[in-house]
Image (cartoon, rainbow, N blue to C red):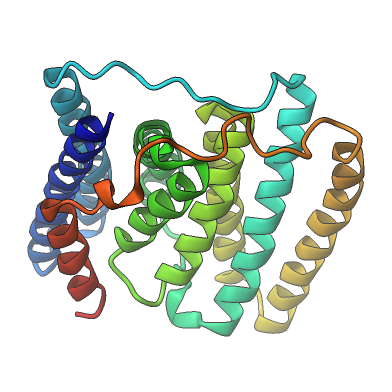
Length: 283
């Protein structure tokens, strides 16, 4: 199992290096203006490639090493309604935190303005749909699941760290890292990536819609809309927390600690990858 953990860490690093290379290529192409629609289309293609290619590379390397899929040793199976509730709580935390983080650090906020319908559709797909599906599959279903050999807490933190760093912005890193922690927790609590995809999609959708609204209304009105949305989401989350208390969510998992030391994760390729991304985050 130690050999698998080290080999998996190396495979993760190689897969993410592909994303780094694509990030550089996209950066160079962004310096060339091809037109509004064409630029949006290029951004969509690279948004998908930066996630899809690492998924294919990592799964291919794992398959080549003959590693079978790790089974999650999660809490006793809960009713679907309980998983929906824990997912909604996760969304509420991420959404409310995101609103206040964006207000405190405007440089970290991504703004979307109302433009022509085609551009908006392309932006929606690249900024809302693609990250929700592919990021969750890569960072939770593949990475977080594999890292449970080190323990669930380590799996959540390390997958969230990679998730945050791969946003390539020290402004966005704290927000992305916290989101990764919350979503990773939801993933291991529910044991299914479909819930985290729903959470991620809802968060991206709300952020996208609110940002577009912000480009259409006055600043004071937009602030009232934001605060009203925060109040509504928070108010809806409170009874959800109450309903979760009686359920068997007191214990995190059956097996909270893995049987492989966390040092096996810090292979040479992984250390180099993290160092490179840290540098890129400050460029």
